Length: 503
Image (tube, rainbow, N blue to C red):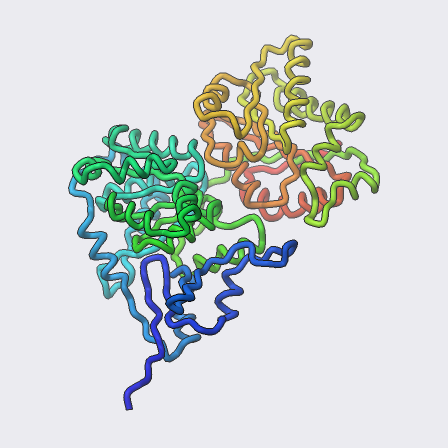
């Protein structure tokens, strides 16, 4: 008697459909749910229940083989070959020329990884690839070279305009592409403009760069993904590239669930800082092959010199209690505590000691960034530091910026400034500071991922030592515990040298 088939598990490049799906499968849904412990409801779910058609749609990165074991009477319906045929048919007819080749073995290995086939038995290219290279090792270059070598028509997703501008600059720098051959999709008017363009004009565009929020806002506003599907069909893209793929993971999920294109995910730190979010994030990409520069036998040499300063603001038990909330240690409350007198005088005195007696002890200028947790604390230090330099006769240019500072002004400030003051949020990613030699951090980081990203802003400089200075108020038990984690999970891993100084 023929086997009874109850349903299908349908594979697309980045989404899997289980149909029919009648009863809740806790193993799947729990593994893809971030639970809000405050509101006692799901904060995010990396699946879509199509109750009209009795289907469940989940990331293909959640092991297909596991699904087959859960649904033994279902058949596997692999649609990826049909998707590959579409992508091949719509490959770019024009030729783009690279100006540079790979500069090291890491980039060569990364490109070999991106070009791998789905299996030895098929000519289908891998539908999902996760590329994790340390900051400055060439993620952007590898992605652009892959696009050029394979004649792809890409749509590159970014989470902020400054990253979009960086991509545009690198595309023009690395290839013979001109600025008018790059289209930046930001806001609904840019989508309307594309939809009105002729097919011939569309095909003249070689790179599409898109802000995540433009598409996800469209989906939320219209409660439908049909407009996005129409857009992808109109512009004939064959590849999705997600930059800083650990950041907008909810947006990545939404976009991957509405398209039948392959995806490449780029990140220097492929994990979420929140453990509950990271559990779901890792499950979304469980079956996605990853390449990391750390996995190579030739590991890149560490070049960051780490100086850990321990000081004690001598908080009372009440001070410590005020900085704790039901959600944990509060950075905002800690910064308020620090900027109030008389604690501020002690903090500023210690900061000046580090800055002028350690970093600038030989009075040779260095490009320095100092990070603060709040704008109020930043502004107070900024005003006092300018006056102090004036009083002491130090010919140092001091400036500041925050998240509201536009890209052009920010880059101009960085170029002409000796000491730049900013917040950790404005500094952690998407910032390329030339000749930055020292970062002084006053922010008590609870996330090792965020800390790694921040240290990554310090690039290797020829014939110069780069230094990351971490100031820790060990009077607070929470900060003392954080420091222990930072030392073991981050500093021992990436530090060229580690010095610990106490005051």
